[in-house]
Image 1 (tube, helix red, strand yellow):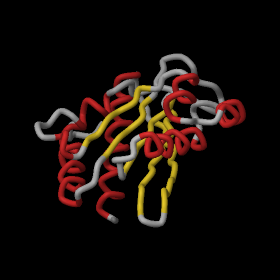
Image 2 (cartoon, helix red, strand yellow):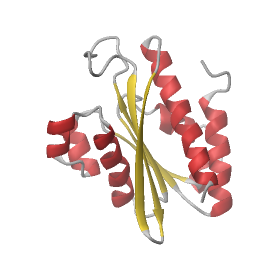
Image 3 (cartoon, helix red, strand yellow):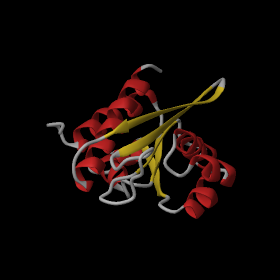
Image 4 (cartoon, rainbow, N blue to C red):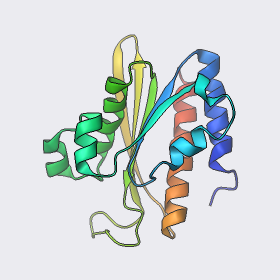
Length: 168
């Protein structure tokens, strides 16, 4: 497991966003608010953190983030396709946000299948730029118990967002 807590990565991301005058928002499923909690741990986070959505059910993903029912039916909630739509949906709903992360996965201990094992987490990253919204997705499989999988997912999301925010 990473030695640095998620809050330290959130603080680094917050500084990058604040220095560039950008705002952040997120959508979480399997992490159930852990990313938002890390983002708001440090005082002053309202200067760069707009909001977080916890969209655990498929209905919530559709209603709050504009994820297509067809995407969920064809690829499932735990898929890169859904993760990208979740992240893009955040930017569509939150007009002030410039960077969005989504997290959807199988934290266990149950729910895994041969094609989607426990520990599989899909991430969506969306950035707003003058040319429009760009999205990308990544999938990682984390080892361990539920709490460890969720914590590692948050840290991975924050570390990746730091890289993206620094590439502006």
